[in-house]
Length: 271
Image (cartoon, rainbow, N blue to C red; front, side, top):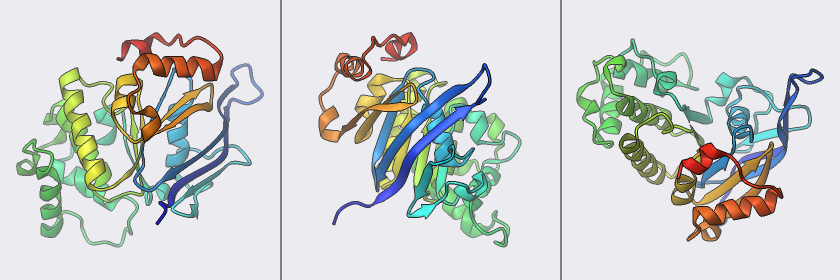
């Protein structure tokens, strides 16, 4: 049986500050379909449109007129962001964004568990849900399952980002969005969180979009690689096409597709 599409983006355009001297065309006619269980890494220089693309999928703002966003067969183009939470979860670059430091681990997970669900549900912090939280946390091997009453502000950056990852996936969203979620971590912690990411995505068979500045990460993880430039997708490689590629190959492919030299020092240094 052929895999079904989880996400369809059609003619996605986004212009900020239109008609002013500050006008920016962030996305310029994006067409993208993501299959069930695809793990797509998205790379590109600053201003390529990567985060704007995730914001469109998450419902932070709608695409410009003529664009269409469809998740699991539902047209969500004009739905408010909180209604997208039924389908989409996100892990941000900063651990502080995805968690509340003054709430306990259990309280943070309760909020995540209820995202997109009916507000008529009983209080989330009950014995049954506590068991669900402990089971989910025990699988990441950091001992957080025994610290449910600890305030999140007492955790390290890596622990907090790992918690954000568990929170984003506990409700089994249709699409997981990873917005440079290891960019602010030290190399060793980033590797640990990335390994946890791969484990959870594979275990739960999640459809995933991961934005990264790191070419090595983009090649090592996922089963599809997309490169963006100036609001367009200029390179789209499946698992077999990207297998065995080196960073120099990826840079050369970009230059052929874009017709210009790859000159983003940040991306070249993240290798």
